[in-house]
Length: 256
Image 1 (tube, one colour):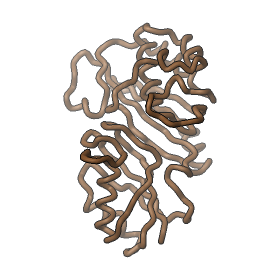
Image 2 (cartoon, helix red, strand yellow; image 1 turned 90 degrees about the vertical axis):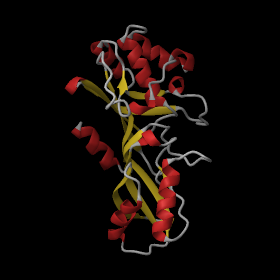
Image 3 (tube, helix red, strand yellow; image 1 turned 135 degrees about the vertical axis):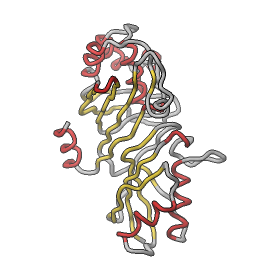
Image 4 (cartoon, one colour; image 1 turned 180 degrees about the horizontal axis):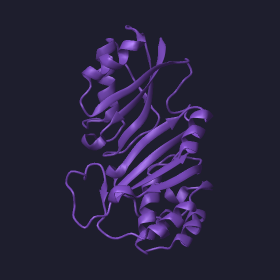
């Protein structure tokens, strides 16, 4: 048996999230069925993390064990031909036997996209969050700085998580405002359930004056989910990259 990793992209708008589930179409199940047919054997995959319904991926990583029945160089094209148009394998790699897409990860980057025009654009609605009110970007940038560092982010974890350790490190948090759109890019050693969307929701509240940037440290310290109430919608969230070596992680941080 060989261990293979794949970097994949997907449009999450047509799926009920990453994780396989009964009676609902998931990204994981779609990939497993396609890989099983391509290799003519039962394949079960592990992802670097679960994405919710409507969330997209630019650089999800998966791993699985397989009796390789074709040259590794052919796998990408063979499997991509069988996949639906909203999933694409970007790269394929043979890995050491102990490689695991989730447990070997040392960091991730997410992007959250939104636009604030008064008029809704139906061609963007699957891929951006439309927020029609003006935001104070200066206050938002001030609040973003408060998230960088190592903290207990329990206040920014949605219910339903079984995480015992809620301490995470945010290495970098940036905002691009070009083309009249907002793109938040956040990189950390890991993220709690819905953590990025709750952080974005809190920044939106800062940007509309419902809370101030100076409130963010006390919300983090409180560990109280009720003080970070708003969760931004799923369609604006993208898993951009997953890192497995310090060099990968540092190269991304230095370039940005």
